[in-house]
Amino acid sequence: MNRRTFLKSTLVGTGALALPGFTLSARAAASGSRPAVLKLCSQEGRIPGGSLKEKVANLQKYGCVGIEFGGNPAGRVAEIKATLKGTGIKVSALCWGSQKGDLVSLDLEKRKKGIEAIKSALNTAAELESTGVIFVPCFHKQSELKPAELDKVLEEIFPDMGDYARKVGSRILIEPLNKKETFYINRLEQAVAICNKLNNEGICMMGDFYHMALEESDQTQAFVTAGKWLHHVHLATRDHRILPAQEPHSYVEGFKGLKQIGYQDFCSLECGCKKGANPEVDVPKAFDYLRQQWDAAKV
Image (cartoon, rainbow, N blue to C red; front, side, top):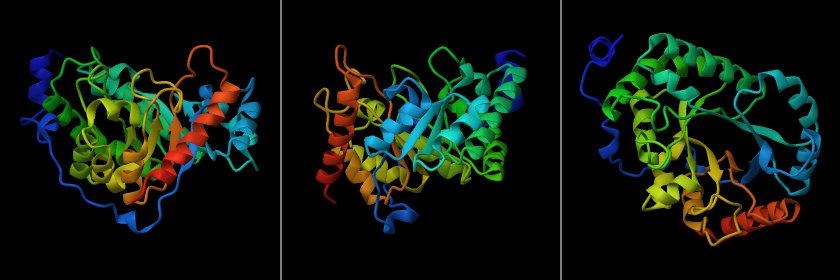
């Protein structure tokens, strides 16, 4: 199927969401009456330890409450459940990605396989009782479509995917990325536009301090705009994507936004250790620094 035929058959209209130019007035989330909580966690690979058991023990020692896994760890469900049992550590989210852009592909067979793959990840996320599955529609060079055309693809595939996520007890989390990584969905308000348009609790979003530092002019406002749709947050510094406290970087303004919406979900490390640093020393320092930043975010 060529591009012209594809657009005629599946992309009726001119891109209703008009994401690049979209603006949305801020509004508090329905859950804003609840006090926000700082639930610190980390991606599995960022934590010192030679095994999952050792990593989880370190997370406990650091005062954390969650762990994030990459991809679809369907083959590790028994191991993960057994290791986490009785520890107080929960699975925060699955960092699944884009499946090479298959879900928005011009090749409908690829799209079908991509949708099947993310549904499988949703099954795993539900079984692990996690927040959801992090999804990026496409990185650079993974789609030939324009943003307005991609809007239409998501409008077509998301209702069923959102319903499926709700059915199994999970959700899809759209992740905005900076313009160096994708031309599509760079700011939180753009993901909010999709969530509002669909109004499906199975289709939600997340925010990443690294990307937000590059794309958002007001991090407080960005999180307030995300409101009830926001269900996961990634933590990293702007310049080198390293651990908090290893280079100057403030989280205070963003944390103010999380407090204003009564944020209840996880904040997870997605960053590396500075070259030459000792992760056994610097990772717990990063968590201590984030707690200080949270306390400094007065609202």
